[in-house]
Image (cartoon, rainbow, N blue to C red):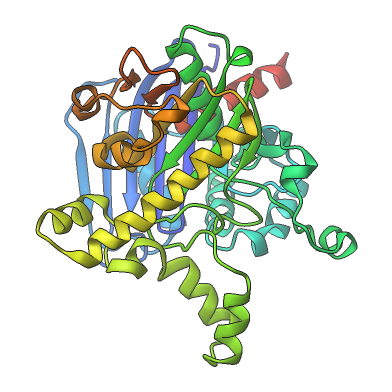
Length: 404
């Protein structure tokens, strides 16, 4: 029996998202999400896609990521899709930060895991959870190839002019301070899918990808290769996000330390967890923010305006970086579902060839689609991201190579 199944694990700071795919035909066999890990209100939602059964849900405290992955294993086993199946070829792990060392998917061994651990200081919210997922999966199936697919890998094609900060070179190199970028699996998938939507090859298309979720990032993709992206050394730089500030004058940190008496740890929490939309108006859910705006809430309206202003600045900046733009594409939770965000981000950019058709923009769909009018010089699109499929494709391609 040929093993063609790949289990994809996306271990976040308080969640585990998973999918089991059969790479022989791309069928999704099962999917699910464990969320609010460590809380009394933990929840696991499991969907047995291949069996066609009803989704199952369990609630109650799930103490940590190890308990979460064991619960996922139990749910898969209940569908006859357990981790002990001989049809399982590999487990693919999303790893947020791979530094410069990991530029492509990599089979995980002790040395690889140690290097991922060394990168924790630049991805403290994410890499520890990724590592826990890897360790637990290796313990459950020590005989199975485990593959790391790195968020940063797609961005390693950035030229040095985009990747370096203008600080002392020796200091930067000693401490590995540079712009790495994140959400790379999403940017890679969406940029290729956009080219397909336009009926062109990826190497013939220049795309600005806007990955807008609770975490948000933009990228400039020229001919299938990333040439700039908004996140930097960590996922804090760039766009306004749900709880992260995005771009801020570095001297804000000095000011808060000297004048505000805040510690570095307190400022870290402020910028990563108490800023962005939640810092501006108390909500990081775009649906709730829009509801408040419709009710006349001025604070929510200002937060939305700041969010859009930053987003529009990056569209313009990456238009300049690329020189020619074939498409601006929105993806991820906010990008795919918030029509007012898409409309506002493009408004006023008609001289750049950008426009949104109101009727097309208002349509809710899970399909990749154009939302720009026919006369627009630059296509505006919505392309649902599929990071799990991207991770599974890269994992299976590597395992097939290893076994050939």
